[in-house]
Amino acid sequence: MLSLEQIVRDPENFRTALVRRGEDPPIDKIVALDSRRKELIHLADIDRANRNRVSKAIGDERRKPTTEEITEMRAAGERIKQLELELSAVFDELQATLLPIPNTPLADVPDGLNEESNLIERTSTGKTDRHGNAHWDVATKLGILDLEAGASISGARFYVLKGKGARLQRALAAWMLDVQTEENGYLEIDPPLLIKQQTMVGSGNLPKFRDNLYRDEETDLWLVPTAEVALNGLHQGQIIDPGALPLKYVAQTPSFRKEHTSAGRDVRGIKRVHQFEKVEMFRYVEPEHSESALEEMLTEAEGLCERLGLTYRVVKLCAGDIGFQSAKTYDIEVWSPGSEEWLEVSSISTCTDFQSRRNRTRYRPADRASTRLPHTLNGSGLALPRVWIAVVESGLQEDGSVVIPEVLTPYTGWSRIESV
RNA sequence: GGAGAGAUGGCUGAGUGGCUGAAGGCGCCGGUCUCGAAAACCGGUAUAUGCAUACGCAUAUCGCGGGUUCGAAUCCCGCUCUCUCCGCCA
Image (cartoon, rainbow, N blue to C red; front, top):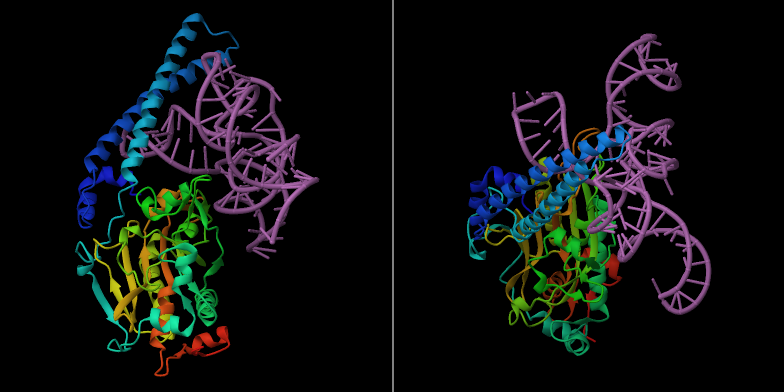
């Protein structure tokens, strides 16, 4: 959520920033609602202050209230109730208006309304001219991927990994978690996967993106679409102690996404599925450090691709292509020789204070200082099925076997996947 | 699922209708003392909103929501969460 205070102070600034994303925000409506809100607060406060004064006098003088006082105070109480009623309606409308508005892009985010305006920052030295069989052929033949079984158990866009295929994924996840916790200083978290509505609102996934989320009707809980949601909820409503920032968390969880907005796209293989594993990095930082934290996280995620020997590139998303809660995003894409395309395996964003404000997550910079909103950053480190695809397709040998990256062998106990 | 207990400030813990935004203690911050420190003593220590250039003033908040009352942390109703015991269960 954007700052109401700041919008009212400088409406045009917000309008301009949001237009860059292709949005036409109802800024005028917000400003009008806010001035009505202030007016109502003021009127109710006058009545309340008066009532408090009279009641206190009665108490101090240890007497019964007079008939006139009772009549008058009852009338005041009635007015207060009415004002509060309208105030709560105005507040609700203000919330409903603000919640679907996305974050404002940072100044250095490139202009553009769709992915064509994204900037390729750099491409690793690996080959991109290498072609091979697609993972759905290679892996099926090796007996490590069973798309039919996935479809039979759960339907389209579900899959089953078997044997060394399952082990490969587990090894990737374990290795990534180890790198993040042992080298990069993240604290490992194993969060709940069923999420309260309030927490989903806090991260920015609700109210706008309910179509892409799974939900249990009976308990009103939502399946995590990314661990970001849970890690972002970790401190909601809290005031983080002085000196505690930065907080760095990493979690491996499944991600559940309906993906029917993209029906018909990427239908083959496991590139786009309803349930996938992902290792997610998340940081809470002081606003002063959020830009450098973003660069660090990018470097950390790139390091993983590098050490897996994958060909990858870094893309800086344009204003129209960054996610709802993001102010600036880098994507990392790895080359899939089989399908001859770049696969997004990581998306690294700073959400500035957008999520903290929704969550009421605050921190105290120093003892006795007043609270501020921390910046939150998230980044995949990395998304598993796509890394799995790239590892399998890139490691494909002439004889149909697959050689896996050396960093993984301590986690697998073998270095090659052979035909059965 | 059944029975019971509880939820007050950073922590602990008083408080059954007005003098309680909230005693006392701990912690924290500042000061006195000291060569320095400890101890002792003095003072200060919640969040949010509105108004004001500002000193500041006002309002709200004692798990959450509603009700009674001139007035609610305190009385009534509903909910959530935590704890204990029983049942069930990976």
